[in-house]
Length: 441
Image (tube, rainbow, N blue to C red):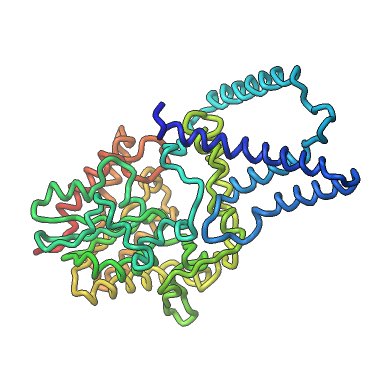
């Protein structure tokens, strides 16, 4: 095992062992002080309560995950309470230490075996060497580096596969969207289009977790930087038009607000962070030791997956789904206003705009006429037509793929509910876009 591979495991062990040992050592030092037993007990209890409350304090600029903080605080408090006065018998003597370790190892092995019998593999937390334990405030929300590139050094330019570096040698097409555009597959449709359409550079400004309110602001900041000859905005009908987006760099709320008279205003022209303690509990991630262990252990991966799911249910501070007019403004009105903002940003640069409406896999596989995605598609097509936005609709080609005998070829094969395209799906979309999406030269 190389040092780079071993380091995350040593660090993960340190987040568990060191707080416990620190609590034991501090507790023994307090026991050694010439105080009365009652006073020593009160000091130990006060320190334990202080440690346990620390994860709920407002988050600083550089911070641990709330769950790492809570785990280490809990282990430190446990060490304090288990500490013994020097010279007194130990809670666990040397004779009992080995049997205790054996019981813990056997219990862990049993839990792991049982977890592997449960149907459905959990999501792998990822490569331990790429996991982080310390975060900066600016890193709480990965979307903010694309929304406010001036504030965060335009570090997306360093991701070479995006092709965002400006050039005058070839025709440039900027693709904007969410994780459907910024995919985890080996090759996304933009890199395939580079090879299929000689003389063009296809730039990828896809950022997972964004929505049309972010697309407008991203275009405002990136059009001058990338200087495209054409813009294609990919709207995912599964959640882009009917969910309440929250951005930690915009007070944990959407980037736009809707007024009762049917207007839309931008809320954040610059980053505005919320340092409420609940932010860390919502964002996580799960404890570092669990994430590292989850790379090899199915039981740990299941715990991480459930924790991440529970985090998303925590209400963001100061905002709710009815804030800023999002709850009172109908979907079709919001869709029209958001598409108008995107159109106007692109029109200021006199660049052709094309809108592509990506359907949701679960809708394509269903015949339910009441599925809201069908309604959102009709509303988006009507709004785009009224605004004069050129629109392409790959619904039919993806419906054929979703209902084919092998839908996993076109979509992510790990989860039948996952709407993201697989390798073959990206090839299919690239071919279709090449034939239908681009404005005539």
